Amino acid sequence: MASPLGSPRPWHDPRLLSIISQLGSLLGLLLVVGFFWVTAPPFRSTNNLANIAQQAAVISIVAAGQTFVILTGGIDL
Image 1 (cartoon, rainbow, N blue to C red):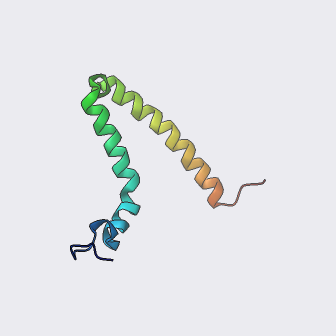
Image 2: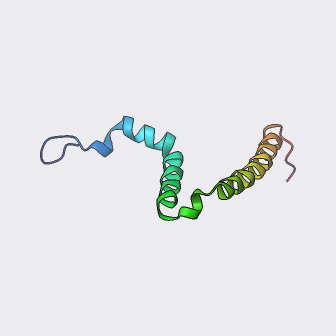
């Protein structure tokens, strides 16, 4: 539907909505990281970045294992 000025509203563009639905989580993560990068200097320390990477690695390994169990049908509820 056109706005009163006759131009289509940009947030109703199907291509834009498709991009947002596909990359929305990544954009949100980048916004949060960017916010803390600017407002909290200790966030940029190498020790903190190594700690975040280590914690993410552990969660990723567990998530990969759970995904494997689900895909192979090994869930017995």
